[in-house]
Length: 365
Ligand SMILES: *Cc1c(COP(=O)(O)O)cnc(C)c1O
Image (cartoon, rainbow, N blue to C red; front, top):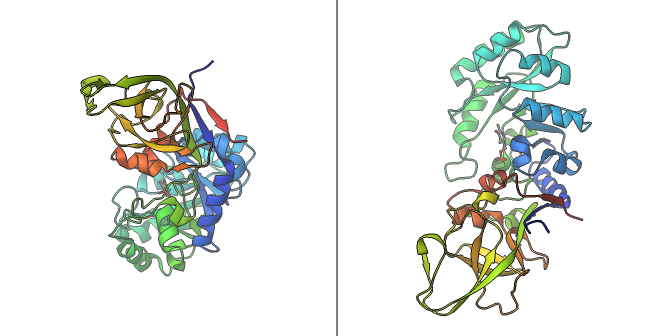
């Protein structure tokens, strides 16, 4: 029998989540963001349910090739554009739309030989200060692109730094609007958080929203809101089993560094999941975990291949009992990935993306 760890993907949850995001940003077209191998879920595993999106957005040319190989003939957008001139040949061949965020990318386009002019998304740095043209350089870039025979339609794009937080997006929306209000072309501004929180605003939702995390069933603004608040369902479940049981007496310790010490008699379950599976080592005693669909706590330090849970109040728990690290248990109980991420001082995104290659995946029946 293989080691009893399994990541399960629920395609119906993706369908539900996509519909919820559409509801929040009515009439906008939706990029299904599938960068980082669909946030760790596997592009091929999510494709059937994500085909209900209007296009796929990603970063990596190899991932774009995979989406085309699955038979997708609709729009694909390279969110960071091309990395070198040669990449434009693949854009032409696969009909990829691409972001243009710097003058070097315009230089590459200007020397690119193509029969078919490219659709580009001109990116403004409206305050994130990652990729994009500064507002005062944006219109010059637009004019330059517009003059190129290699360029077909120009769409307008920016990205928010605080759509999930207190600062919000108004300052960036204003910068973007001030510069672009009289330019033609479709607009794309909103990630998941902006779509859910501000999607009723026509300027924010624009023509294309770009939700990633919400589609995968994590609340972008947790802990202010959880997935139930947004009507989202968990897509990934990481499950394992108890493979050993120990009885602790007061004073006994558990695991490396003896970081946990029992002050009363405790029953401990040893679970076949560790940081080499992608479970964060930073989760400490108290992190929630489900045993047979009942909430209990992690105790002691997470090791490479195992972690330890408190089953003192679960007399029925035994070797073979189901353990849910995050997602949905067989009895329907939910442990949101966001809760586990928070216990590790990170976000759901990182946990999804970090599930290790040694963990087998299955699609939910
Ligand atoms: C990753 C990414 C998104 C999706 O963000 P979420 O927070 O996952 O919704 C949208 N736009 C760009 C440019 C991105 O890089």
